[in-house]
Amino acid sequence: GEDVEQSLFLSVREGDSSVINCTYTDSSSTYLYWYKQEPGAGLQLLTYIFSNMDMKQDQRLTVLLNKKDKHLSLRIADTQTGDSAIYFCAESKGGGYQKVTFGTGTKLQVIP
Amino acid sequence: KAGVTQTPRYLIKTRGQQVTLSCSPISGHRSVSWYQQTPGQGLQFLFEYFSETQRNKGNFPGRFSGRQFSNSRSEMNVSTLELGDSALYLCASSLIAGGRVTGELFFGEGSRLTVL
Image 1 (cartoon, chains in turn red, orange):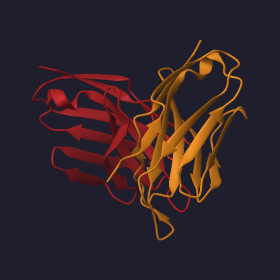
Image 2: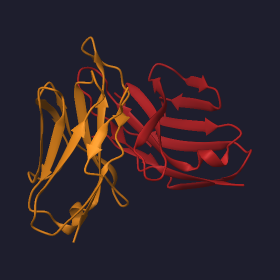
Image 3: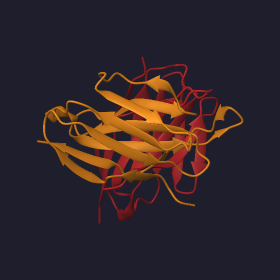
């Protein structure tokens, strides 16, 4: 079955880069996502990448996908205190059925 | 455009009771998914509905059920509540375009259930 794993906690200094890592087990995953959850709120999609891509960049965010190792990472450049949140990696097979499997979430703490 | 609306936001129940949670998706979104979020288990998929039909179901006991109405609004019900059902229940809607999944889930703020 599908399984997505992440480290639980990451602490960085403001202005540094943050790298959040994720591994998944299902080789048939088609879409891989990064969601952000701020305190007291639902999840918000940050970015996603198709499995046939290696990298995707969107302003301060860079997503790297190593499909062979089933490893996904999210790099946040120039991390700000407003980036403090829980970041979830997720995967789905796409197609006609919408079932998204989420990782446990990584809590990012940005130290001023 | 209004986002996903979940009601109630907070509720307290006692063991053995039952609860119904409501979700109104973004206008035009026909797929509605439900997730349970707890500190220990993270986000667990409950079920997904599309056009009033349940298409996917997670590994939860039969006490957890749901339905979707013709206007795409969805409800989930938990019967015979247990202490372990205390959680944040998140609803998410998504746009199915031309029969294909676009991939993005739009989440509500959740209904926080406390079972005493």
